[in-house]
Image 1 (cartoon, rainbow, N blue to C red):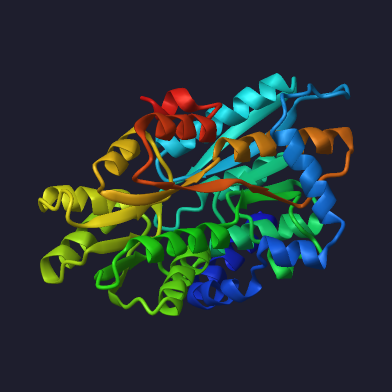
Image 2 (cartoon, rainbow, N blue to C red):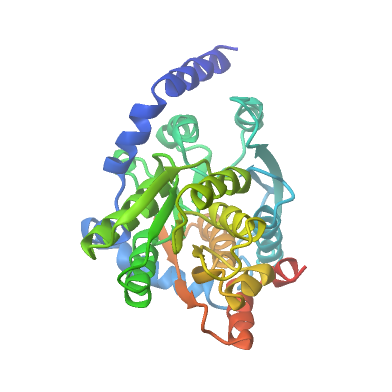
Length: 367
């Protein structure tokens, strides 16, 4: 009871101070370049680990006395394509590695309204590993006591910006993408492709990890190119909010291009364009591709998309657990590949790229 009581206290304090912590988080993040510069021995380990992720699976070489216990915290809708893909890829790689494990999945839904039940259950289960698929103020507070004690071990999914505050007691591994590189790549492409007179609006995320790593950086890059953003609106990271915000933008002051800071926002913008009858005149960008996303590229609703090699993250988690069980050295940071996909690419090339990004879960993405 005492442990639970203390958990409630610091979570409540975390919510009270959320705005301050979210603002400070940007100052606490390191990009991969700075991280490898500050810890030179991590570079070679990361290269070796990347080779492992990109290679056929090599089954575990130590005997296990018991099944390893893994807790996975997912966010949003359990049946979303993203969440199903994470689970399918992770389970497949763990089977291939012949690891004896028990996976307990917990959910933190969009409408949880501060419901901490999943966090209590996960802490009480005392797993060997916690895989966290989002890092915000609440999740950070929840994880910090485990980082200090070293049990359970923490893996952060889709988060590749090490926290300076955690350098002395880091997670087992951060796995994610170089959001700075992806965003500057997209901004550079749009600068070259959009005519100088193009009117640009932007739908951005509130202050937070992606809000800082993508939204703020994109706006900075546009300013560097002397591109004026006519309207900027902050929206929550869900399709409906983006749809409603995009409808307002389209009615008040239609732009030629609407920057979308996340895939959920992009899908909301595309839906609004369709609903308002703007089929080809106005475009946006995307951060991933399903088969419906390919159709939006082909129809030119999407000007360009950043395609992330998402299955590699789940593969990396499985491989990190295997190396840890074997007692081998591993990097603290794994950065997977991403690439820019322009609308001009032919259909067959687009489909091949989607298959490459989702080579373990491609069947889900083709549904």
